Length: 575
Ligand SMILES: [Ca+2]
Image 1 (spheres, rainbow, N blue to C red):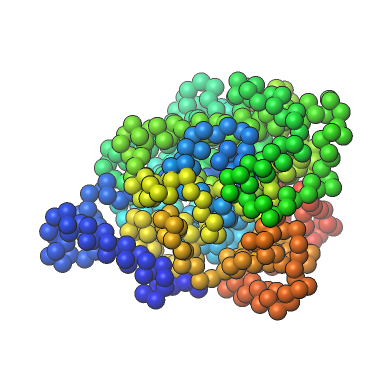
Image 2: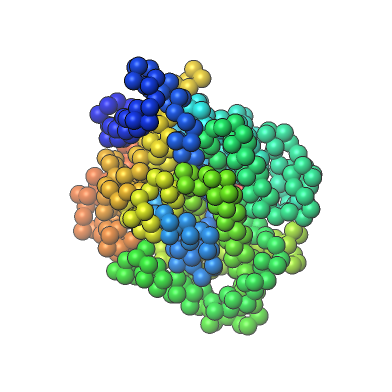
């Protein structure tokens, strides 16, 4: 386990960064530093503008290939511009699910360590790591950066145990405009009770109140307004900011403004087979995907597009048009954030990270769901389904929930003109990374110290490493494998190798540089390596509060396989 001793590579790297910062400050004439004030005072004396702002943009249930700069046909010019002026990571990983990813991203720990071994609707008595709330043994990015003088704010979906005592405004966020668990798109949602409210600095306000937004707003844009307000709040206080923008989109139920949906209606009659091959081709041309990796075959549950009737094709086209519109709106939001930061003179020294919380979502099965009219309107109930989710995750196997590459792979774009060399603009970074690295990166670039204790509680050492060497094209200092556990689905990635298991199935071993689409299981050829990785996974699970999963199992598209009722845990409906 990584510790905050001087022997860890990350600590050495942070120490070097702190030293560099100190040297720069001295050269700029901060005589107080020369007189030997401790580093914390020195950092406080440094002009706030010297420390970068940090904007994390997290989208929900978006697949690896759904934005233009990762191969999509959906136009995302604003996100693509971030990529062309920043660095794209091609092997960045999340945890395959909503709450677990949010816990890991915000704490620098694995989900069970942070208390969020499952969604925030499942609390297991006597559990090690499934507490349905953020545990006292972790700190959030907002707590760490706030203690270092940052303005901290959040907009969008929380999903980290608000109902169990850990809302964002009690975990370090100074300003908040949030929902308990997303699924809010229009002012008058008619679905679940919790989707009818927005929390403004912790105050519960009806979503259709004029305090939240005017008129028939769409939440992607409404939260963009709030995000820019919080940027202005940080400016007024003359502080650098940490802003966590957690989009609810494109999570089900799929909804978007009709005028945006209409742009895409009819475009998807090309079908998933043709579009998937086109995405794959663009990914190879861009260098994101190695031509050695075969495109994962279309699953047997997904029909060939050409086998469908015209009526069926029209229905599927309407579903995908809503999803594409949601991505389009996210891109518009990114454009507004970038323009807003540029107008305020803040763009150059803001580290923007853009990523998704899990792979494309196949829940609801091959047919998806399309109920209510118009599809994507406030009264509709639309799920993308397995066929289009297979397109989302091009070229990989499987979906949200699972630890195959389709479930855990996300784009990660890092944009920071003041911190990423111009020579790296538009470049791809192939070194693996994981959500656990974002805390270490934030500490590295800000100089904030990750605490050993917080509010009287001992804090687990962070698990990740800083990604800043990769921003400049240098090797990452990772000394441990990367691990996963979700619903009994397991994986470990160690260098070139990945050992992976679907719950209740057998381990499989893949050589990722040759076969990232996980088509050739080498476990029979490498039994010793498989044993080593299995032992490492077991040791990791035992030391990071991983609970044994007791079911239910999920079918190929991620829906629960119903067992006899007595053996089922009381889990919240899948989100
Ligand atoms: Ca999600």
